[in-house]
Length: 579
Image (cartoon, rainbow, N blue to C red):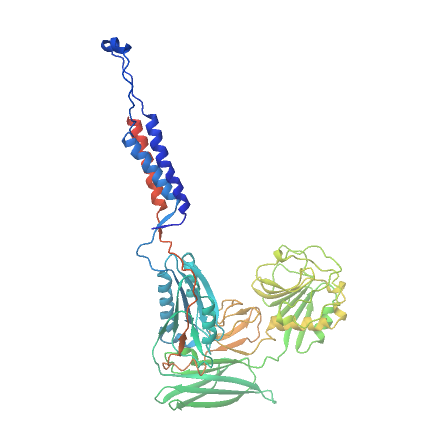
């Protein structure tokens, strides 16, 4: 038994106090009997009588109540049979190859089992093994549910797992007061490490899955030709010991462009090239599908240099109209309201209609509206030089006079928008994000009352805003497992992509509200598509850090003692009432 508050034993002093009170309370009752009153004048010889403690049920009840309360104050706990407190580090492989044969589902289940087996004094750290290792969560018995949720929401995507970085993060979480254990859950499809690997804990390596024959598209790329056509290149690799006969199909904007049968030798590759016309999206398919189907399909977004359809809604002439007309590859229309035609971007200058268009939005000098809680205009503030967003870095706004700015505090920024340019007093100037389910950038100032239109920063800020809203600043292709860029994106399944999550779905990610091409995400990779079992890397064990070991808290007993004291008080009341 362990006492968390030994000072509570002072309460046991109440036991002798109760006994003394019972002795003092004891009195002999005087009974007047007429036949013996004649003897009252006789004085008995002096005799000292020792007072005895009355052994009654009432005394026993009082002593038991006091003892239970005193022991309850010490907060005792039952520790017999308990193991020493542990700190468990779970390194979970989330690279793309874990998708094969349900391997990642096994890893998730084993992780959930470890979390379920945590003791009250145990702690756990969850580390993601990927190209960029991350600490996903840290906690103890009370945080098990949050950690379970994190594990359940993970989806494998990525390549070139950085085991050295994952072990470094794991070693950084080692606890000095606990027994440290480290568990690695992986299929073993890891690149060789050039640095020695070591851990300061008991290491358990679990290789999941099994060797599987696989063929996949490991490379698919495009290049714009001088004749404005597109050159496509693909490489298909066979990661098995037998020849693979497959069919390679090329689609351009969903239409069949080419189809051919290929035979890939064991461990070999087949390369193909095509020259196709203009289009938005090229798709390559390898059939029939195998157990690792995500690398049997690849996409590439073709050149996006076509004209951008922009509509400017303004009530008065604005420098913004002249700037938009001067930018290349923009088809501009101007009106007092939103356009009835399909456009890629709508610029709202000083207006905010009740019914917003379905395109991306650039809102300039928004009027007072309950949807955007701006206040009256103010004058004379300077822009901060702090870079809040890489897409807007390098734009020098130090000489701009922000006349007619509509202030908004950070607390009033609508959900989905963040501040990317601020004043020197940390008040927003430019917001970016998703608003009303549309990709949106908000300029919180009036161009007519500033000197921005006369500065070099004006075309730079305009171009950066348009590129961000329409995807012009985004790459045409990203590897699976890459982190999402700052631009709001819609995933291939139609849901919005979280900005702090990996791109874990194969297909085309589109800019929210944009009608143009997006980012193609493919899973084919020479390392991840090879599903043959790999040799476990050599990891040395170093001494664990020494410190005062944590004493197990065990099962708390004070609620039982307090409950017993209350029950005894009820019995004492009943006994006194009956007496």
